[in-house]
Image (tube, rainbow over all chains, first blue to last red):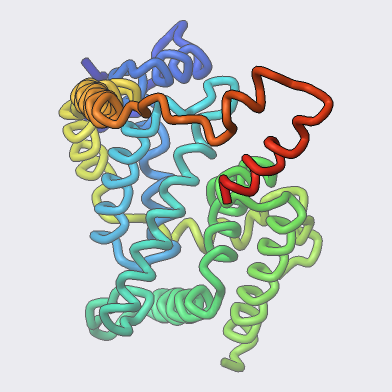
Length: 193
Length: 114
């Protein structure tokens, strides 16, 4: 059985590679531990594409099932995280395409209306709002790349595996995403939105 | 924003912190609970060979039966149509008694066949 639900699996003496090896042979417990360990990252990556937490959770769950069905094709010599995140990223992009076919929707969830708030909170709210809008203007793969690199701390090589593109392309994605985000944030901080 | 945090080789901590705050999802523990439940209820892993095997056995049997039927049918039909020994178009005399003057009958036999 898995560890206590909700806790990332950190089992003394059991290395990632042994878990990966076992998972690739269809060991459900090992697979579950690895997925749980990266589930929060996966949800943030999905959210960065979809802008909706409920949808992001659904996508991560679907991705976990898809990963389990494909686990035979996972090479345990390689890191589990980019392999799993690749499935999550593809599932998120597919979900976004389906949603676009259904109807045009805003990228991020509507924030609940807030009453008057202190200055610094109001500032943060404005910043968040601009960040959301700036993120929404980025191509999805740039959003994923900058989230994986600057938020999750994945290496360029891992992101390249996750997105199925060369490392140089990942560097370009991160560079352009950062530039676009900083341009917006700078204008907010200078008070010239 | 500081430009020295722009290195493309290391995460941009300032931007990362802002994004992390923005990407802080609701109810992490609840989400992990739900994921844990899903992962405990995963169906047994089925290898693609298992799937193929269940599909292949009846298919191979059906293919073998079809092949046997076709082979039998082909044999039956060909048995009925076995070519009988037909009369030679070349007169036996032309083949059995070659003499210097027999060019004429062979030529005649060929012509006769047309």
